[in-house]
Image (cartoon, rainbow, N blue to C red; front, side, top):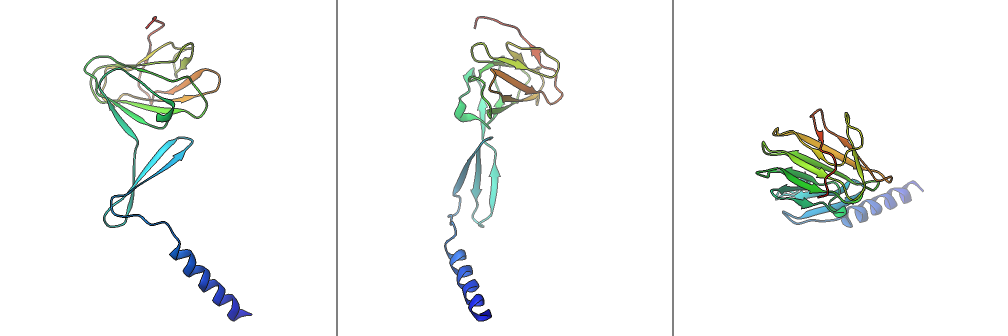
Length: 161
């Protein structure tokens, strides 16, 4: 019986190792998670590294649901406005100031943004400070919750645009 178990274990080990997933040099592997898409790269040595899902923004833009998990590097030369999709549970976005200009986050329709020191916000404006960042989390009650990472953001108030 012991010999039988050893043979079965050896066969399972050989089959298990042989049927694994393989990748060529510089292949990418993406995994869709609740927090967004995670991107991994296989280098020429067969080592895997994580790459953040990022986008450089220089003009006003609209964020999509499919971009959940993305980090936006704000590099505009004036106040750049990002319009958010409708708040929904599981959506998360990060914005990092890569310049010395401000940027604004504008919620969709009647959605609101709550930040640490602000009441329901209509638009959230960053300080004109390089590296000022915020991560926002959607909820299913038309609200975005903002973690301003200690930076002072301003509730701009409602404006028709």
